[in-house]
Image (tube, rainbow, N blue to C red; front, side, top):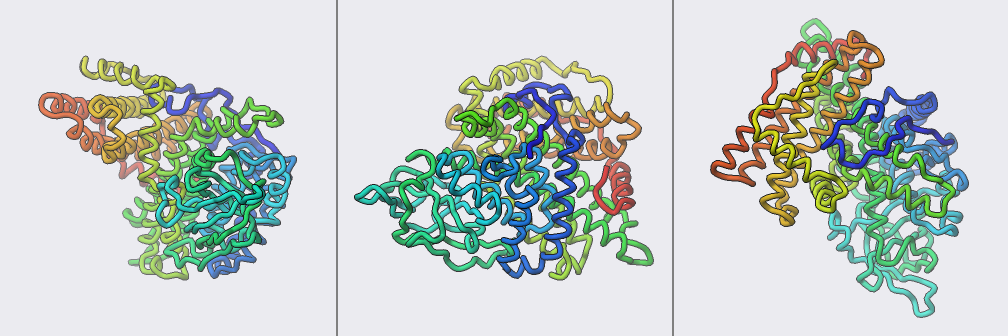
Length: 596
């Protein structure tokens, strides 16, 4: 089954920071096709009927249950979403892939097992496998007969993947590679059938291999005792003279990093979508509990501070949907013209996704940190019961924490966000430097005369100022440190925070403008309220990050000048966010769940 996302305009990755996009180029959940809606409904039904009733068995590590659920998911086309049809896959677009990750997120443990199988466990073979490798492995992975896993990390090389110690040596007859080493924290380790394993040939050339669990010298270590996602398998792989047929070398010798880093881009946008689904689930549970829990003679959902938490949770779901589906919509637009039958289709798809590496990292960082706040507020709403295992808040709280570590830590992703944009600017792929110069000339000339008309004019002005503020500080940091900026991690991280918040603000405003254009302002008061609340908070975060960077890149008169500009760009008329959040909470409580 294949679907087609609506936007067709190919947009350069990162270009949103320096230019405005017409609304028709921005994909939102309101743009889902009938087929997308059907996929969402099918996945939701599967999650509620098959996953939720089995959560306790999953949490107690009944691997047979997880395997059976993966097989059932494959049978209805939601566990083979990115596998070509010729190998038994559903071959869906990336929007559909994100929708499934979103709607299946009712159990953190199962979502992790599912994600490792359909994503990082299978996609390296889809995109880098030979015709023979695809024919041998993909049909079994697509059907759920086999489960996939991905083995990159080691005890001494988590984020520093290229520093791996696992070695591969070609045998004298050149028929077998002998692998020695140990891989750590491998998801699906105890019940997977095939693993994509990274090793250095002769201790130097970083390369990927397809390793089956039955290969001589392969074994799985003891299951890790984890803080969260306890129902997913996490264990080390032990390679003791593991014999891997030479034809199982994946991709090119010495270019395993291309596989590792490109597959992580896909993992990041899927993690973002899955986390949004997790936030929606947490909000539904918290709302249901708040409505039925009585205190001081009335439902706690009537208390202002509880309503404020419910509103905050809903706002994060709304903004998360906006930025995640905007990202995947751009990816689909970039992939739309690729002939999937062409010999280099996999390479073109891979490059199309790589174009949006920064947006994938933003989705991962923003969503993984947003859900931490959501599940924390969920526990708070449950009160003492939130600390008890029998209630869903406790498990959600533990499960959420790993998202900031998965798919590259948030610290690594922050460095990627800033570094990737500056690298593209220096190479000329993205006209960031001219945009920075224009911004600097404009702000030095005095207060902006830029005006916006129509719906959300004030909010559009805030987004414009956020972009200018981000460009200003990125330019100042680049000018002072030049190529050495990559060594200034605190500055890189703070600039990344500004980029992340700007993208979230921009995405929320664009989504709400599209809603207003379609339905009229009167019918979009809830979306407007959520957008305004988010922008108020985001501007404070942006200003704080800017104030952190400025003294590190300037001093004396230059610093005073920059601080004046920061104050000017961050200045805004405050909104009555108490009233706005009351409006959001009222709708959520009435519906008993997240809704527009």
